[in-house]
Image (cartoon, rainbow, N blue to C red):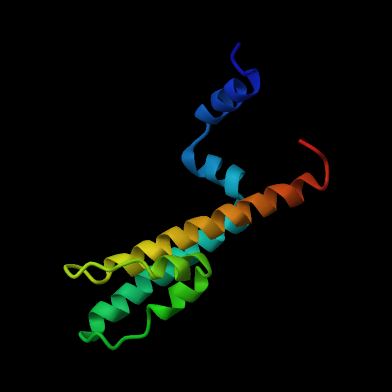
Amino acid sequence: MPDTDSDTDTESDSGRSVPRRLRDHIGVVGLVYLGVCAVLLVWALVVTIGAGSDESMAGVIPLLATAPASLVLLVLPDSDVMPIVMPVIAIALGAAVNTAIIGWCTRTLRRGGRPD
């Protein structure tokens, strides 16, 4: 017998836009955090590429903004072909993990101690 709760959630989500579903799942605070992380990543890439040297420390800011998950992922092996790929992946996954945690906290606080 199919689970009616999951069917209802799927049907109600299908009629809403992607930004609306994101806001419902991770909250406004999570969206703002994700936006700030994206802006910091773009800024760091522009500054690093624009500097013309590998001495730019701009990449540290988005790494710290997405810590601790990005710091754990940063120790993964880097490729010799494109050395900037692993830090970008670490920052993106760190931001996604932190946003999921922020969304969970937002939903829990919004619920206010009431069981589901």
